[in-house]
Every structure is written in structure tokens, then in C-alpha cells.
Amino acid sequence: MKTIPCLVIGSGPAGYTAAIYTQRAGIDTIICEGPQPGGQLTTTTIIENFPGFAQGIDATTLMDSMKQQAIHLGAQVLPLSVTSVDFSSHPYQITLEDKSQLVAQTVIIATGASAKYLGLADEVKYQGMGVSACATCDGFFYRKKTVAVVGGGDTACEEASYLASLASKVYLIVRKPFMRASAVMQKRVTDNPKIEILYETNTVGLFGDNGVEGVTLVHKKGTPEEHQYQLPIDGFFLAIGHRPNSEIFQKWIDTDDMGYIITQGKTPLTNMPGIFAAGDVADPLYRQAVIAAASGAAAGIEAGKFLATLK
Ligand code: NDP
Image (tube, rainbow, N blue to C red; front, side):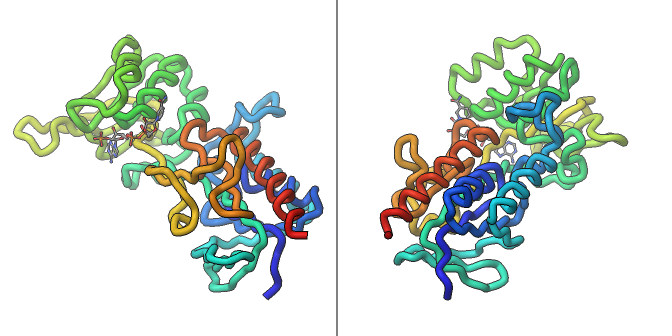
């Protein structure tokens, strides 16, 4: 089997930027697109915080441009997911969903993270039409509108506070009678007059003819006081956590207790030589496209350095 110099797993900003850098360094690179070509950004509409686009840019257009740039520089894009890896010896073995195998001298893991959803059919129905898992990405569209955020952790408090700076009203839907968020984050939301916290409340559905127009909630579910009601809202934000897509690597690659790949200092180096991690799979903090792209660049540079040591 032919050994390839570099395999990039994932096709978000981190993956494509990594491939742009490796190809420019003369390193033949294959990108496995994975189950969500273009990554998480493709679940949103307009990107207004990626530098270089004065009027913002359609997310799909942005990701397609990155893909075309990588291809233009010589990268090969496979519309496949990686199903398993064997990093027990170098070069590394990778198995794809069509059962084919690749052997790679360097691997850049850029598999991203997935926002957790409640699992309601309405979340799928209204995706991009009022349902979002990223306040920083989509909050701007809800200026002076009413939104709801689900979750009681630090992310939910952060997203609710951010949205309150734009929207006229923010409901924070918390399933328990208390929040899990740190005291300082809780204070931030309780002190904000625009945020109303709905404790002991579960979401059961969304409604609206042209996108989200309201949410159906149940208060005190499973108790004698249980009652269902509808609340008019314009946007529904999930903030119940993210799951880094690192499962298939965890046998070999060190992760933290949430599954984020641990990288060394400010570098994309993992605990395995020649294996690098970039983007949200290694970033529990920022989860921004521009930061993912930057870490992809770093991974591409490090892959080149590693390959030079093999010569
Ligand atoms: P967490 O896992 O801490 O919190 C998830 C929240 O979502 C919990 O309140 C949980 O409720 C709720 N939830 C989970 N599933 C459901 C569901 N099906 N229906 C309704 N609610 C649900 O995730 P976060 O993303 O908030 O935080 C992850 C980590 O990142 C934490 O360690 C956090 O401290 C950190 N972080 C820190 C920040 C900061 O310091 N600025 C900002 C953002 C994150 P329940 O409590 O009932 O389980």
C-alpha cells in the first residue's frame, strides 16, 4: 500500500487550512471530508466574523472556497469518513467507511466538535431557520428580538449574556431548579434585566410557519403541578454542551475528561509523533472558525517539520 505524506481528517476551517499549508510546502495531502463536509459552519447561514469579508459571507460559500483553494494547490479530497485508526506503529494506518485503507506518515486530526441537541424533530425542521447552537455565529440576526437559550451551564450563561447584548429579551430554559454554571456566570445572568430564567422547564417542541415563532415548554414535568405552555420567540439556541469528535482516536491520543485532544502548549502537537490536532476537537474554549483555521495552519507547518526529520 502506498504511504501518503499527510492525511487530514475533517473538512472544516482547520482541516482545509492545514491542507492549504501542507500542499504549499510540497506535501501531498489527502483530506477525508467526514460526515459533515465543510464542518459545523455549514449549519449556519451568514458568517460575519471571519475576517476578509466586509459584507459577511455565506457559510457554504466560505467552506467551498477553502475546499477549492486546497484542491487548487493539489490536495485530494475524499468524500468519506474515517471509521478507525491504528496508530500503534509508524506510518499510521487509517480505515475509511468504504473499508479502504490508507497509510500516512503524518495525520492532522481536524474532526471538530458537535453541539449537543435535545433530540427533537423540530430542531432539525428549523435548523438554520431559527435554531442555532452558536450565539456568537447567529446572535446578530436577533437584534431587538426575543430568543430562548437552553442549558444551565457556563456555556448557556455565556450565550444568554451575549444574546442579551443584542436581543430585547432572552429566556434561559433550565431543566433543574438550579443551574450548574459557576457562581460568577450565574450572577451575570441573574443580574441582567433582559434575561428571564425559567427553571424546572423542559422544551418539547417548536412552532412557526416561516421559521421559529415560538417554543412549547413543560414546567415541573412529572409532578402534580406539571403544565404545558407556549412562549413566542424568534430564535432558539442550544447551549447544552459540545462533544469533541475524538472517539476513534482516544485509544492512542491523550484527551481531557471531556474528550478534547490535549495538545502541547500553544502547538498542535499531540502525544504521538507525527499526529497533530487542530480546530474544535482540541479547543474547549473558543470554538471559532478563524481560530480553527489558524490552528490548522500551525498543524500544517508542524507536519512539514516532522516529515523533514524523517529524511
Ligand atoms: P455543561 O456540561 O457544563 O452544562 C450543560 C448544561 O446543559 C447543564 O446545565 C445541563 O443540565 C444542560 N443539559 C444537558 N442536556 C440537557 C437536555 N437534554 N435538556 C436540557 N438541558 C440539558 O456544558 P457547558 O457547555 O456549559 O460547559 C462545558 C465546560 O466548559 C464546563 O466545564 C464549563 O465550565 C466550561 N465553560 C467555561 C466557560 C467560562 O468559564 N467562561 C464558558 C463556557 C464553558 P443539568 O445541569 O441538569 O445536567
